[in-house]
Length: 255
Image (tube, rainbow, N blue to C red; front, side, top):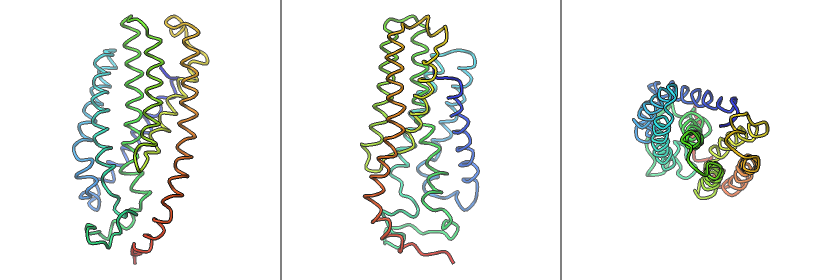
């Protein structure tokens, strides 16, 4: 498991989702397509399984908590899939005065692309990435407690899977998900720090050479997933800046 302070990511997730809950209660934002169609009741289902995870983990029922969190991760994938294909209100890909653009309410002119991302999209990207990380951590915890063989190989494979996920969501989509690799980097840093001075319980279950391999994989994942999103964002911004600049004049200013 990562060092204890790495789990502070949950506080950040709940803060972001709390802001979303408050905003979607406002009458001006209740009927946004991103709320009614993309997020919808999926978010309620996510929180139901999140509650199940908290209760089962509190009673140390690791297999059940892992199952709850895995299902929650799947639901978060659905939410993020819906959000990916839901255009921003003021989307550079579609001027709001185009024929296929939906009606824009006066209250929405304060909801620029950055604000919409932070409130309605970022919470679920962060939650999805951290849920996947936590699922892998708990699976390894369950694997070790069950005394199954080759636990070191499973731990190393989990780190490799974490690295692959971050690379895929950064380079495969046409519009990359920059936040999720950074969240993975945070988790990998927690493992890196933990394995730098491993606790006695870790030393009892793993050999030093296996810990060194896992630490190396954690370091590589941490550094790469921190730097690559910055490079990818710079490249993505450079290739799309002219489009956004041309469309900027099509968005009427608020009087």
